[in-house]
Image (cartoon, rainbow, N blue to C red; front, side, top):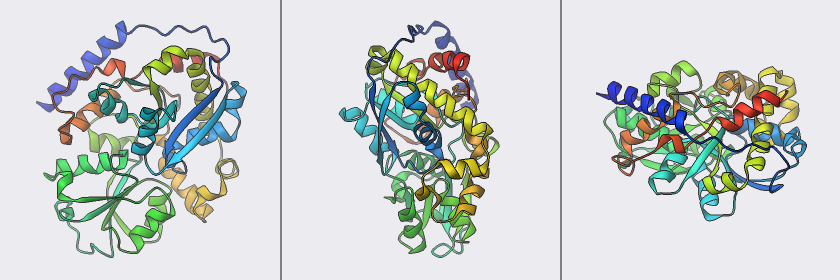
Length: 345
């Protein structure tokens, strides 16, 4: 039944994209040059393309003055956009679907990651006898922030094992040194987080990985298909009013993605802020090798990605079950396709 539903959803999605109205591209000057972007955990590789576009002045090259506000998790960044303090979010694609279920129309327009890069692991200190996901019942799981993509991934893995989010306690621990400290001090029994945090904990021998989505193969094993991850998304009203600005943002991000495909480890280290390295360059480079495949090479949304994301949410979130979600209104490849014809690395 799940497979038939998934295939039907994919077919419906493919049909919907054929009739989706194209965006008008005049690619003139940006309608607004000042853009506020909200992000949840900017130091994570999940959002690395955003940092590259910022640090290498790709936004400035497009005539934009971008202000990036960093929050503890993606759910907090989402709230900034809904509340009007941010124009654009660098966050998880699934948030566009959660918003649509609340009758708020937001659309993804350039993909940063083609795999979530999220790792669920247990503490060797507090759970030395861990045997299965069922052992997490009653435990504290650290996530970047409740409602973020890390808690969504953990909730899905729990649901597949017959548990619900109510069977555990999700604790917001952020995406950096605070998350590491929470695990090491025993404040949490398990953690769902991303690199470089997870690689640092692995190398320190602190955790046992139980579910991993840093590679395409692992992602498909966990979610049953391609699972889109980090992206830039904005309200449909912002995109409609500012098509040139949206195109300029896309151009900068596609350029960053291309740079990442060709860059060396030393070039990456010399580009990101020192604070991203968590005090250990070797760990950062090791983590980069873990997640490099997860980066989108071109910014395009995979054909089956949106349906996989929706299926994932409907597995465990009662607020998404039975809701009439129009996937064709949650994303577009139009801006990326234009960027790919003009942008050079």
